[in-house]
Image 1 (tube, rainbow, N blue to C red):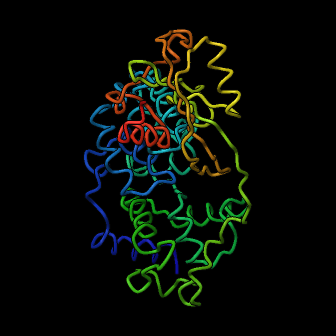
Image 2: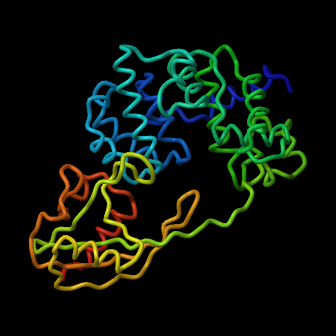
Image 3: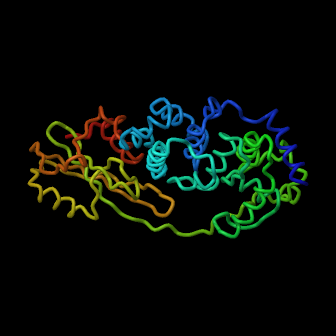
Length: 351
């Protein structure tokens, strides 16, 4: 099958069956394309849609995103995960505002925080109608099955091979439609499990389909036992029934979000309270829970501590606050923290 044949079949299928009503396909501009492509990294379309709608209502254009406080940006990203994406969006928006124009070249886009080659290719193709290949997870799956290429996409040499193929297949004309079409093919037909090969426009050319081996492509990531980290989360209640929260460092896990103080042991958490002359009236622990990141498991145990004195001994300017349940949708909270706070509020675990 030649690139021209692939393009013709794919675009003919897209014209009839492709998705054309996704929120980011309306009022297309570089900002909306960039935002959607960033949100869609390692995240399903169904999950992204409500976040995209709320985010673009709050920050309808690049200038408003650039002018926003990072806390506000993180608040509207909370729950979507991979928070470095939000921090990089904010930094890049400020950089673009400083330039005075949205970069329309590959080098210009790659110079911005958080924009890799595939995201840059999508922006250039969809927003600027400039022919550039992409290689997101959906496209990798299509290409590995179509050409019967074994290997884990995380390997550099494997990715180089896929980039060459993606570049050869990308047309000069109708490149915006083509880019959306090949992503749609992977997302709606060439799915990870139970692909709908009978409906695929290139199934008769697909090596994986013809050999009955679609389940083996692409190869799975080599298995590795994830390490487990333990943490005590201090849930400190003051007499007004507010809970103490601290802002995490700007980089790292949940960077810039609000969180509970974390300790290696209950004794360490108690020492922290005593060092701040907090008068403890009651304390107990809740059952441990697990949150899994891409590279480790976090087993956290909430330690509930009620104090008798309303004190500012624990406060650090702009980096900590007393939280009440009315603030839950006004703060950038990581999903497990928000879930725990909701649980505490629902169960009225306040003494």
